[in-house]
Amino acid sequence: MEVPEASVVRVRIAPSPTGFAHLGTASTALYNVVFARQRQGTFALRIDDTDVERNRPEYEQLIYEALQWLGLDWDEGPDKGGPYAPYRQSERIDLYKQHAVKLLAEGKAYKCYCTPEELETERRQAQAEKRPYKYSRRCLIDPPKDRTEFTVRFKVPGGEIKFTDMIRGEMTFDAGLIGDFILVKSDGFPT
Image 1 (cartoon, rainbow, N blue to C red):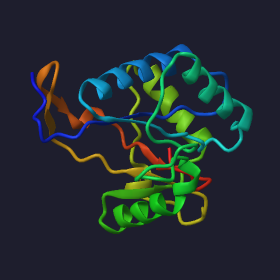
Image 2: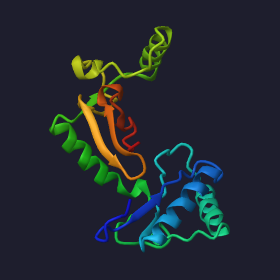
Image 3: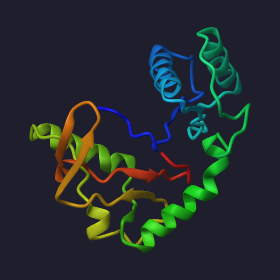
Image 4: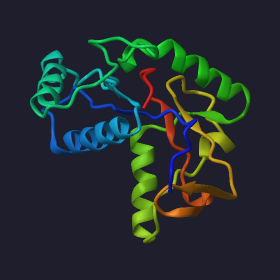
């Protein structure tokens, strides 16, 4: 399948600076660089530094060094800038909060007050019943009145999701199989 000439190719990798650079980052970067270069596109490096407990500056530096060692150069990134800066997720928090507030106001997301222990109980119940785990939506149906700490979950609509994949062609998925995933963690950082 040919990409229309009017299409602008812009791809990225978004490694987390929480440990050593690994093969997954390298292979994704390689595929994206080749894809972008073949189509006169742009390859961006975004640092996904939303895990504030485990982020380390030395791991971010190792990401740069590993990509450079592999000969993979990026067009945009925290160290180079670009038209879609900033390129560290932690520097875009206000933007993510604005969108989360909008989704909440539109009823497309909701606050989830479940504790990790409650969610683990749900997971174990699903496992005992030999079914895939999917969040129960209990905070959407009956949110607790006595809790203040929450995550923001996307309210996955029912029905089918249809799209055309460039490699596999027409694809259809039952949206009911997808659980309401977390958009914003309880610490205010996006997932």
